[in-house]
Length: 121
Image (cartoon, rainbow, N blue to C red; front, side):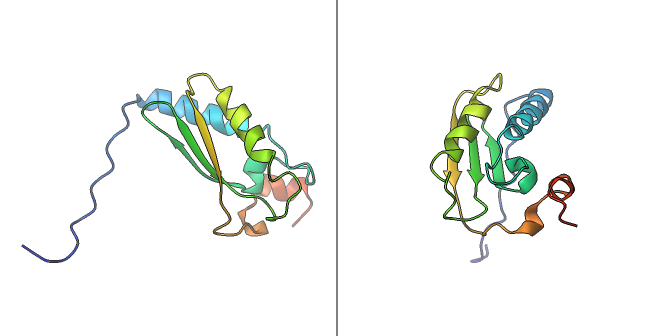
């Protein structure tokens, strides 16, 4: 027996069928793409403001997101917009949105689609 750390447990497979997980994932991404930063003409998904989406076996969805700047004027409203958009996805039971600022957002997180929309090449 060794005194070192034990190997990481492999992630247990989801209780949701793979096709249902894929459908929900696609629908959640589509819902996230309906939420726009009011100061930037690009959706929050393409801007790279969504850091994590976790769909639980119970169909609860946990989202970690950030803002382009911590002092963003819609800091209190945007998580509610995200929660409402994702809650409307068929099959989603509950949505919890956590605002995180580590790592801080920067323009490198933007997709090519957002760069084109903002003419940032």
